[in-house]
Image (cartoon, rainbow, N blue to C red; front, side):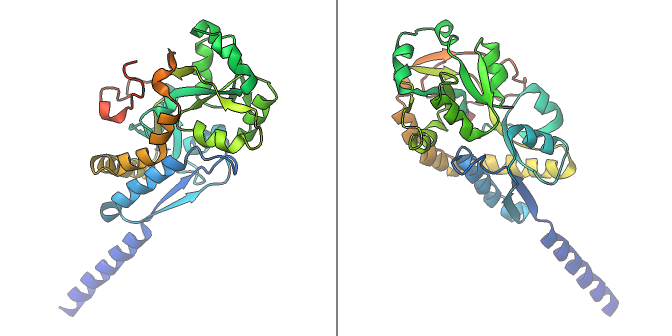
Length: 294
């Protein structure tokens, strides 16, 4: 009897010890510079998801990786390297072949609605434009490796790239290109930050460029990656249902949407030729429509 009790106690202690070690480690890509706030909302959503699933799935850690460009992020996570275990990126057919997505657009596709950062003296040029054909005459800036580049090029835009995030604003100020399209989730913080350095930068007032760009949490195609993805999908649905997600969305974006006066802008729609068939367009609660019907 004593041996039996000892065996049960030993097994319990082993299981308890194993459970204590089973901390899920979410290593995420940090900002690309001290001025980069693009993903603050996304990582706060992830933290809320993990908190909501802690009772069922156990403890977690969220720690930043070393600095990585978007190209390197993709390479690291595709090769299942320990330096990065979760990535934020728009979906396309190629990425879905090699990685595990949680197919819930993190920002309800707000990132797919774009305004242009320009120099103030260029507004008069945009005021004379009225169509996609007119806009195609404008050279655009983008970061090297960004998923928007093939979308914009497919629509007929000329795109110039920069390796480093901060250089995109520097080059726009130098008029290397005439416009830098930014998601309405990004542009508020960016203009507030970079106009202190480049006071001639402003948000163009007339146009709203739209293309579907569902942005997901991505995980390595491994056993650990599958467990992380399952936890995040479950937790995401939980925080949508209990209102936590909507509170975060409103905290970050409601005032920004109003400031940009979206309903009075001329919307220009272009295709995203790289979208896979798995995009959950039919689940309307996952998408935001800032200007009514597209």
